[in-house]
Image (cartoon, rainbow, N blue to C red; front, side, top):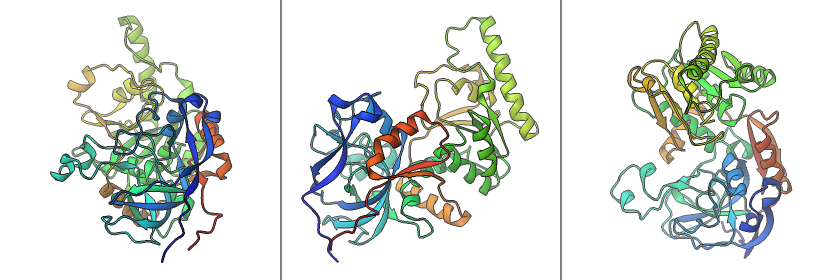
Length: 398
């Protein structure tokens, strides 16, 4: 089977002069379909997931992705195509690409590295390679295009129990949460564990609630309003906390003792609300991604010997904590970034075994991609994941 591959393709690009406003940073341009490296395949994208790194890329903060898109083996371009997860069909295969053939239906996983890196050749963990990066954010030629060149190890078979849109949003958030819950030795999820989940109604949170509940844990969600809280209840959360009831969010750095005691009283009330849901049991794991505003509270409420596992910092990445909770109560703060191809395969097996699928809030038309990012940035009423249709209404030419 052979597919006709055009010389040019539609792609949503970012350029330096447009960075700043999410709604105006993206432009639908015709760009040349890139040539494959020997261990890459070309995928015709059917659908792609919308993630927060697309917002960071469009803002140009905390980094200008266009200035750095040639760092990982690609030619430096004056445009950038973002998008870090998708589903599609393999339409061309490099001569050294393994385990894939033209016509395969795949999900593309965004955590990647350079195969010829000495770290990789030495058989060391790929996630710690100096060339490890997120495809479509730190490197170019991401998912928001008709075609994407990706390494063979980024592709996993599309789950038969998911449609194209569901499959396009399962790898970034799903694998991230799976790794946060099951990878970190000594603090893996066990049946009966309480897990506190920030942003329970979002893409990460809704996946976390489903996984924790399916495995026999007790998920507790933090949300910004009661409508989102009731949604979390509908998908399996034990109970929820409306964070708007509290006013202690933000850095504790620079507080005097009196101010710290006021903060501690508010944080203690927050912990007591967790206790009212769990029967005075503290979270064994805290799924943390707001960052600056919440990290000190997460560390406080986590149980002794428990883990605050961090995968982002949407409220800011400079934070402060009370170090006494680390050494006296022997708690752990663990960074967790994406996952590996092995994590991705294990996650999809877990999903099939427990019947877990991503919850899709909305699928946008190709022309609505800037609006999809603007909606995610506002965050109003979003429950679950967002996807954009790329090739589902087009027929691939053979």
